[in-house]
Length: 222
Image (cartoon, rainbow, N blue to C red; front, side, top):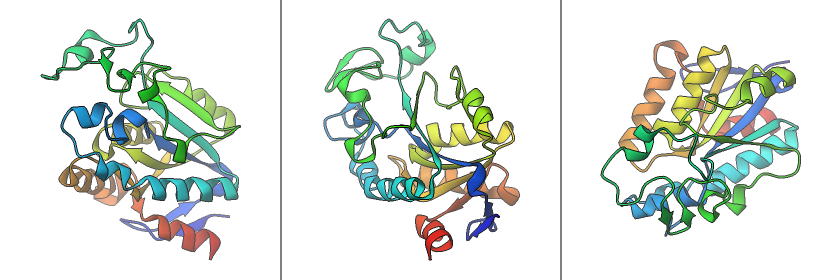
C-alpha cells in the first residue's frame, strides 16, 4: 500500500515494496575541510551541515528495510574512463588524477574518494563508482534496479544541481518516480540548490518531487 508523503508539487505516493534510497557522492573530497572541494575555494561547511540529516535518512531507510545505494564519482587509477574534456575543464590548479590534499583526486581507492564515515555503507548496501555526473552512465545500476523490481528512488547527497539532479533526470527518463529529500542535499551555492529544486518539481513534477525529511518520518513512523 502506498504512503502519501507531503511533498511538492503534490503528495508523493511512496511504495516501500519498490523503493530504493540513493545517496549521491557523500565523499570526503567534496565535504571535508582540506579536501578537493575546499581547495577550489568552496565553502564545504554548507555540505558538512547536511551530514546529520543524511545519516538520519539512512537510519530511516534501514529501519524500513529499503534497498540502499551509495554512489562515488571516481575514476580508475589509469584514468582510462575519464574523457580528456572532463579532465581539462576549467582553470583549476588541480585536476582529476592529480595528487590533492587527500590523495589523487577522484581516483578509486584514494582517501578522499571514500564516503564519509558518518554516512558510510553497511553490509548489504550497494556502492556504485560512476565516472560521470549521473549514476546510470557507464555503470550497471540499471540492471541492479531491474533485478530488484525497483520503480521509485528517494535521493539525497551532493551537489544538488550537478550529480544529484543529473542522476534524477537520468532516472526520470528511465521511468522511475523520484523524490528528493530537500534537507539531505546541498550545493556549494544556495541559489543553485534552490534553482535545482524548483526545476525538479516544476510543471507537475516534471523530473520529480521534493520533500523535507520530516515529511517522510511523519508519514512512515508517526
